[in-house]
Length: 306
Image 1 (cartoon, helix red, strand yellow):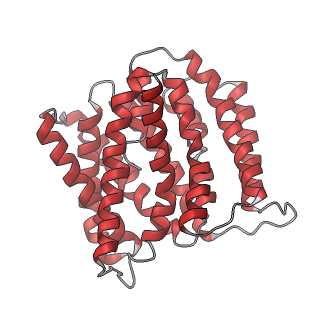
Image 2 (cartoon, rainbow, N blue to C red):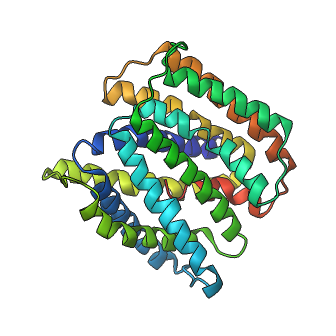
């Protein structure tokens, strides 16, 4: 059990570091080009895994449209808006905003999947919003100066929540690897023309170290960490494992301090406590009410793409 939690915590540390990694990458690659390149290496990694496991299945005709939408919204737009936002947005603030994804997911699940929306979720949402407001205003509640990059991070959060809902819908009849592979292929195909149309000017680093960093983070963050998570998630309680994901903003703070020399402010600490507390409050009741089975796959599936 200790080994399982240790590996899962390592995965969370990797995912939390992705905000700082992304901030560093957008300094050397333009957003649309970075999105295309990262998806390319993710798809190549998934091809290798699927060839090894020989577990990849075809998509039924009735699911093709849904997978296309998942690839466009949950993969391409999600990745592209993430990098566009990180051009100007603070990585710690971005991590805190994305930490509220479970709350939005609960609301969307109540609307589209007819899941129950409780008072606990509403209270948790209010607490989390207070935390976001505190972080965005940097503790100065009398003035609000929102970085334009944060609007794109909100888009990332919304598309991530949509991805979770769509993936949960498909997971009843399609295995996670098949969903992930096909949706990422769609995202890659869609990103190809945009990589040359949306960036002005196109920026591509010529440094081998920058390319190594891009490839390494793509494979480790979206490939190896996901495989480790999937391997050990079955050994622990799903609700406890999902709480570990709330450590991501704190990891982003620490990695920002180490790699970007960005000091941790009191407003970020207070805001993160409100946000994480609100997320835990809003999701605790919901996880108790859900039955085991397909729903338990959520922690595995939700981390597949971003």
